Length: 147
Image (tube, rainbow, N blue to C red; front, top):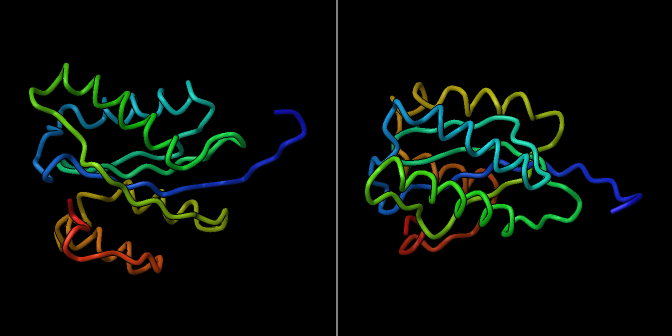
């Protein structure tokens, strides 16, 4: 797409199905690298990836022709195929959270993602997810927010 310029950074968060601990610690870094590769292959850039056994955080930049829903679909569908070969019964939840990130906040968000283990000593995924939604003014229905 010639002469199109885009600076769209997103913090994506999604969980494993039913928030089950399906991402074993030895597979986490491999999954992060795999997601970065998927992003690269689809003209996105993964700036940071992290998470825990039951969820993932990604800081990505989108290309000018990539919609948020398409990016998430590409990342989740391709990584779930790979993870099913690694972990029996692996699946992602249906939904996701996506929030925009300003250039000035990129390092703060990357640091947050890198320090997931530390954050989760104080709060579980459900608490973190709802706090992120509230922080970004995302309206949600408490009955369905966690799938």
